[in-house]
Length: 178
Image (cartoon, rainbow, N blue to C red; front, side, top):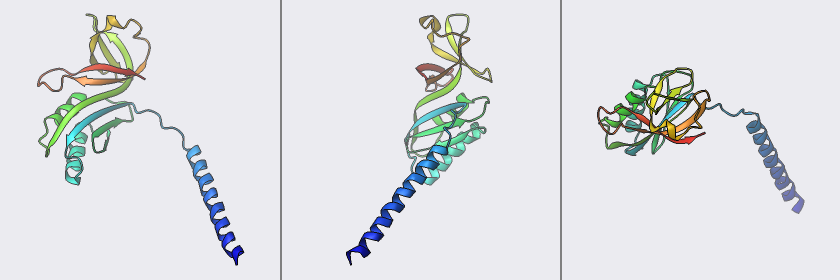
């Protein structure tokens, strides 16, 4: 009588091990995803849990950034650009910051992209996006960072500043070089 219970348990263990090995094999075959051309992260406070607000947020962002993919979780919107294109950073930020969506507040904005840092001729830095040559002002004096070469491409994460005040140009404050 005991043997009748051992075989089903033994079969169950073998099946679970086989499933685990199969899952590992599938995971191993999935190639790592290349980084996006650029990303904009918009940190939000307020109603992002109801389907109506989530839909409105997606539509608002997508209207300003039609070449992007919009991903939304409880605290942030990720605007992902998989292919090279102009990044309407000012339009996306302004539209969401000034929106009248139910109890929604834009808290912070991050930009991630690949490009190079060049001088504007007066010592201030300009980040030039790779492939599109779109430029964003940097919120620091380039002379403080002599190691940043205009010929060396780099991937940055930067805090977007200037969006809280109407009429102010957006600038990038370097947070991290990836």
